[in-house]
Amino acid sequence: MRGIVQNVVLLCMLLSSLSAFAQSEDLFMKIWKAKDDVKLSAEASKSFEHFKNQKMEILNQIKELESKYYKEQEKDKELKSKILKLYSQKHHLINEIKQQAIKNKDEALFLELMEHIRPKDLTKLLQEEKLNNARHDLYRKWMESIQHTAIGSQLKDFKLMDENGVELNTADLRGKILWIDSWASKCGPCIKKLKQIKRAYEKYQPKGFEILAVSWDYTVRGYIKTKEEAKTDWLKVMKKHEFNWVNVFDTGDQIMGGQFGSVGKNLLIDAKGTIIGFDLHPLEIEALLEK
Image (cartoon, rainbow, N blue to C red):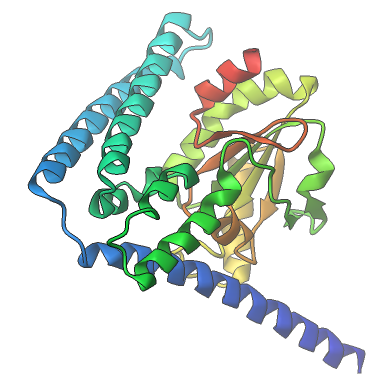
């Protein structure tokens, strides 16, 4: 009898996880497909192409400088300064084109900039009178989905299992500066970023800095695996690179559906649980920790 009850409970948990995943996936795809119904104007198209080219140029420069910086035992402060300056330029570039989208309430440009759009940006789009009811409702749901990552808002706490099967609640990490990073074992840029943060972690962890790395191996789009296969991949990569901070495994789509919306994103949380940074580079986090 006990076995039957346990199986029923497990089935309910699985259905709940699949339901959450389907809902977030469905919302993401509906937003993405909305691009088929709107077209960039000639002016917006020109601006967007210019933005993409400038962004790629900055990212290529960052990549070149990073390859030198992270190879050195004694980190070059001048190189670090140059990398941070380039990231500042990237943020400025993104804000410039977002301001154009906001000023013109340009729905098509908003959709092209989807990965950079924040809740405060969407409030402007929702004021567009030309939006039909269905599209207005879609963008409102979009804003609600990413509201949990808005700077200044309180972290939406969640519970996940660590590599030892012990449940961790983010509320238990209050009092620390917390960096929550989403990653997957097949995501090369994700692993690169985690390797880059190791030095800052070793330096600041004794002073109250903690990393919570959340594996998406079981829920991330495109990586279709069984739960056992996903967990095996996660443990293998985590141990290989000695990611010795707090590691948890997302099986219920709490991060993709409820926090980030895209693998590789991150949040920086202060000691009171308030979000103070979103999608930061490890060197930007290190600069904030130095303060």
